[in-house]
Image (cartoon, rainbow, N blue to C red; front, side, top):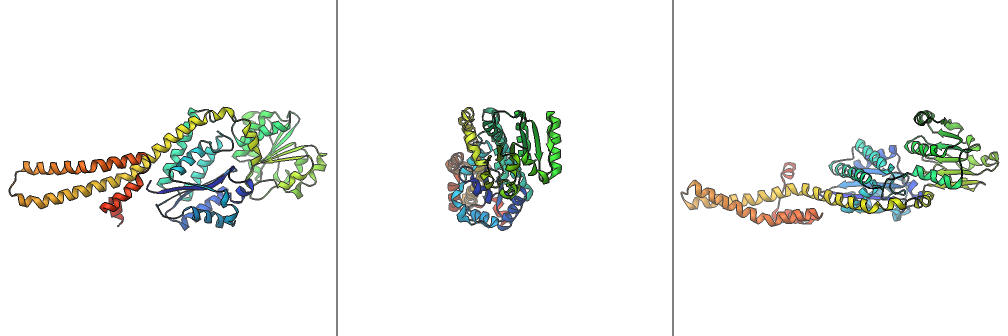
Length: 437
């Protein structure tokens, strides 16, 4: 590829939730970060993907140009005001073909905590659209992400990787099933009316709870979601004013929290009087937000069971056997697309080079022909045509092996080295580069 493609980030395996929440981005913050990154590095393309399980920054820039890994790490650290030393060991980075392969794995949910979950594709599309709105997507990342979305569609269509309930929300419900044997006498509250909240509410309906409540920092959104779910599923869903939701904890049995708040919406101090009002009945709190919505110290109260997004991993492992059978097929689909994508990019990059190479050789041949013609005297048009044809055939034969070798290297993703060598040896400049000059 004629640009350097780089991804740097962390996920649920490389970094704890404590680390992930310190360098996470909500939509508003992500848009601001992308604009700041573009101001700092004008030639750079960028897409930010920040979910409860990962934070990844995808970059495309001219070869050898900034930002590299170090600049990207420093940018994240400076933007969040978090010393790089406190999270750098949790980061991974991939470049070139490895970066392409990683993105394809991510959108196909092979890199997710919940193997095969479909939400990561929607989250990636949202991050891509956010970057496009911020003006940080150019030809390279646009082509890469559009290909990634096609790969995900093929993997989900042709394999069983997404079979069954495969989302963080459904896993949270599965965890509740491990704590409670029945739900017909339980009151469940969903805190958060975003996409995750809506998906989780849908799964909660399957448990047949006694009552189902939803609350949100914007009350109108909670009311709208409650009405939507009630109409779609013909069940009663009650909206609880956010100003009163902590008081309602005295009645509920299960709380699933998923808001985009940057600070805990339930602290140990706020929760302190609740257990006594409940008669110390068991309370299950599942916090699937990053940054976390519930202060960890809340778990110190009697009768409280608090789980965060990382705790769901154990539940996930119990329900993945049938999906793992599809992983091999997904890898085959991904590898085929990686090779095809890299080959297409290389061929696109090689087009101007091959044209410049052909023009160079034809120019030399034509120059030599013009030099020799006066010395041949009066020759016929037929003889002149034969000379031109001979020079053309010689040029084509001389170029056949180098061009074939370039195309073969492009198919293997390794044409960049040979392309640079040819440009240097023959001092080649493409028409596009000449126009820039």
